[in-house]
Image (cartoon, rainbow, N blue to C red; front, side):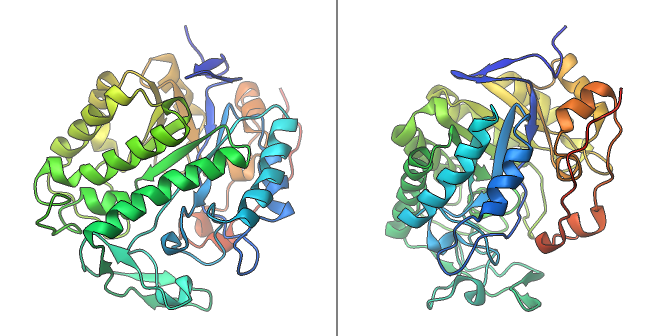
Amino acid sequence: MTTAFDPVDLAGTALANRIAMAPMTRSRAEGELRTPTPLVAEYYAQRATAGLIITEGVQPTAAGQGYPNTPGLHTDEQIAAWRQVTDAVHERGGKIFAQLMHAGRISHPQVLGEGRHPVGPSPVTPAGQLFAGSGLIDFVAPRELTGDEVGETIEGFALAARNAVAAGFDGVEIHGANGYLIQQFLATGSNHRTDEWGGSVENRIRFAVEVVKAVSAAIGPDRTGLRISPANTYNDIAETDTDEVYPALVAAIEPLGIAYLHVTEATAEVRELTLALRKQFSGTFVLNPATEGPTGPDALALIEDGTADLVAFGALFLANPDLPARLRAGGPFNTPDTATFFGGDARGYTDYPALAPTA
């Protein structure tokens, strides 16, 4: 029987175990250059015993930023700063992928600065508010991307992927989940286009597929992953045809041979679709399962029964930097500060010391 503590080959990258650290926004980039700090290097190095670390969302272009103080991968300064992070993780034997996240309409001119305005597939204002540094402010209507700008955005993902490799990352994960730009193209509620990027299922998946193709061509499919979250309503996403969109998307990327597909379950009700996508995708399948609170030790059974090849843990990794050892020992576990974590305020995330687990 395969267990979470067995090694696995991720398209040529050897992982020590099947426990992944899920991407979590931290808002710790420094200054106008949006560079990660030494604290970021320490944070990820502390968690290097994960089979795979997936970083916080990293904007591929300046226009892709969604929250204050999040890091980018589109300048030489950012590449150099991330090299300190990847070196720290590799020195401790870890593997780390950068998550490339374009926030799209989930942003604000106050966050973007320099006269920039949030963009999206269509000028549909998301409901809700965004933390912009000094407090919560209402979202604004995004500016609809032109056809040429869609192409430029795709190339921005590819360039950021090349920068990630230059910075020492083992690969990249394309963020197609949680209501950000790629899912905005997938969803009928946010994509009202009538050109080749909207309307039919084939057209609405096109942006995601072209991003995956461009990144795979830039750095190799073996270094490319994709994260999706079917039926997720986060960030005011409304999907009317989830059961059609995601099988079509997976069918389109399957021939590319990417390293992994990472599914984040919005609710327990999507498990049937999760299993169908698992059967459809021939590469490594990473699952962040639907749970009542932070994903816990019970999720390890999903590897044993074959539901997933890797399980991604989020909040529990914040509270327990040495999580794989604690999972193997059966605890003890520090309790995550879920009040701030699930409230969506990245500033409130709490770090905990790495203490030796007891048997």
